Image (cartoon, rainbow, N blue to C red; front, side, top):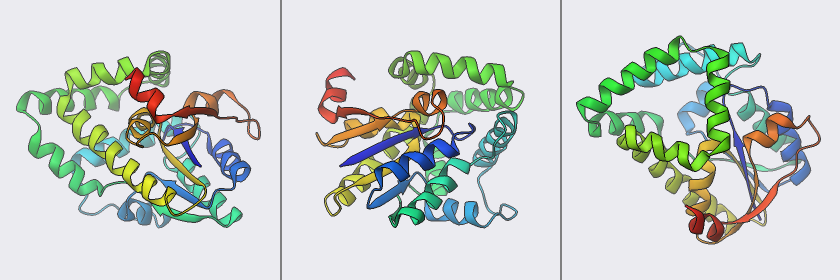
Length: 233
């Protein structure tokens, strides 16, 4: 059994994530981190040799997390703690962030780079209300939202979303072939793409909107199959 839990890195949903892991008691808990980011999360130190683009993104996330009363990565820490509590193995399933950003910058056109830097500047001054409005747009039509992003930033979508969706889906499938139950905590925007790459395997899904609207100890999932998502992409 595969369970996908869609999260947002700036929202106070740690208790809900912890409860999902506790209630499912999977054999393996996967998190959307690579070894370097996991080490940084578990051992916070001054960043070194981190790409500028990643530092800007991290600063924006930290700033937004503060507005929502949490810390960036709290939901991942909650998943790690809950995995230990239920005796589950921990799996880091994401691609190496440094290589991802190096590939992204190399492939991007000058136009995309300028647009991305402009968007980053807007993000640095974005308000909590702005983030909430964008989240509403995403939750009301997530597929369309991702498509629009792909039109404006095709390389960003390909490298940061599509390639990583395939990579993480392959890791989840590999683990699911060896374990009876696997639960993966990933950014909510990755959920549809990972499902589409799971090769028809059924998966329970808990989306970010479910986590945010439900109090702790009351989060339920929805049954979907990858084939359903493939038909509706």
